[in-house]
Image 1: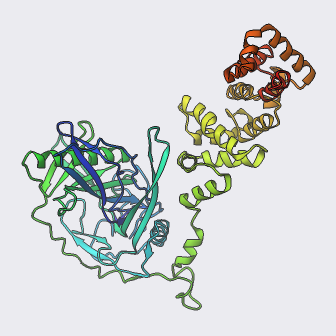
Image 2: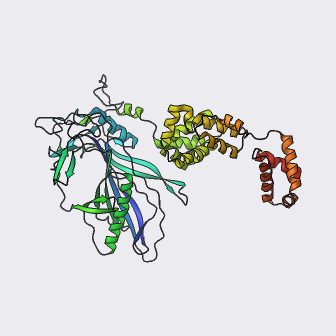
Image 3: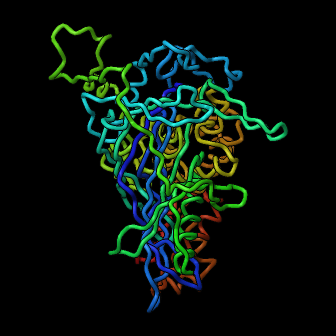
Length: 527
């Protein structure tokens, strides 16, 4: 109880649908976006890939869905929002409860500075306007896990408003095209957490743990459907979704359920529903037609929360007694959108490649370390990191962060370190080895034998032939042995040239540079 909670809200996200194939519902190019959000600390926004649907047939009706998300995200803090009790995951029930948490008479809330700073930082990261003055309110409702009978929140004037988040969704046949989307954030607010109800079905009783409601993320989704151009439909609320995967499934199911209900002459009730993850469907919990009156009122035990920036900071103010918005802004790490833009501009990589580098934890660090140590072009580094290195990791069911930890802590015993890949790319860039030989070397590096790329190349004799005279003689021998292929080349068959190159490479066990072979063949054939 009284755990740190941030709550944010935003404008609803819309989808377009068409009813096709006897009642199935197909998405027509809109992602699952985030709308109403409640943060308990670090925030994340649901992102779903773009799906292309069939075009509606004549006489079919289009549907549009509106989805709003309220995200509860836990703040990373050592103590609770309004008390000095510790925050510790999986602590014994009711072992971290202060007098205030238990709502004993005469106890007063004391606002946690760290939680306020986290709220401001989240608001800045989500491009919100930070209110220099925000207010706390009491939200009244009666439930066993809320012994005070009210919850302290920020209903009227929250700490941050009017934000936005730009993200990308994958589209196209191979899901390789990235389309930018924007989701609106309505507000972010600090909110007291309730306790946790532990239901004992065997004894038909419910136990209460006032440590806190454990869990770092919880999402409530508000969903409605309507025909474009008509008023919005009646919405339902799907409560307490605790994973992005379940959130996406719940939204998809509820949209299809509502469309099916309306097209069969039914009506949508304004109700609260839950998502049954094993059955993959939503189920009615309680009716919301009789709207609950929370009787919001100003919190009398907390004064307005006043923040400052560089222009409004009082002269001589004690830094420990005030919160400076601009100072927090300076401590923000570089945001992903900025990093992606830099990668595209600095290295000329595709936007979708920049998303992959950032989405895989530790991959950007690995890429940057390779770039620092190699002379190879960034395009080649990008290809090897995203295709070869990441491909090997996925084959082994390893996360990038696991590999990064290995190379950071164990050095040469890791599968492939940034230094090793940089050295390999230098050998390839200087034409010491061929592309096929480079892949052989990488495969050997993955065996964790502690050898460097140069050692592997030397031991397996993978160097490209540098003796141009010997290679020229070899080209002559191949041409004499395959007169018909030579004749096809002279007739203008481009495939015949490639066949000759392949024959020469085979004779050299792939140790000859294809570019040099082609130059020598063209010279001899006078092409």
